[in-house]
Length: 103
Image (cartoon, rainbow, N blue to C red; front, side, top):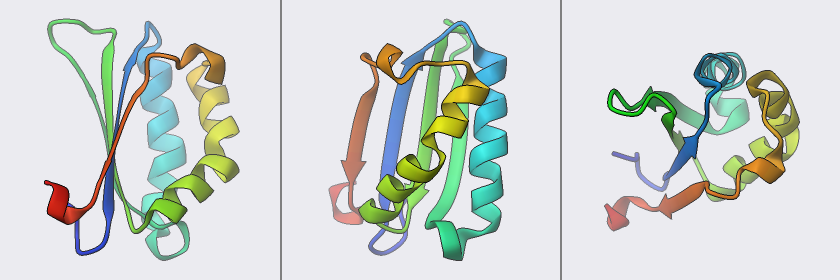
């Protein structure tokens, strides 16, 4: 559950690159969780469906909507490079933004 004023972002992706996606999450998001005050990232997890290994769910909590967008601008290319994806391939990504009252 988000802390006061924070937002949750969920992102569901179909991919055959689970290991690369997990590595990108661990490397890019992992570093930023350690630097939460600077990055605005509170937590980040990535899950893979047992029934469909290509079904991947990312869940991240951010201090603010602005912090999340700043992350995308500063670190999105690095994440995509490690994950082996092209942003144009993400047409099926589902975003959900909510505040604490929306849960």
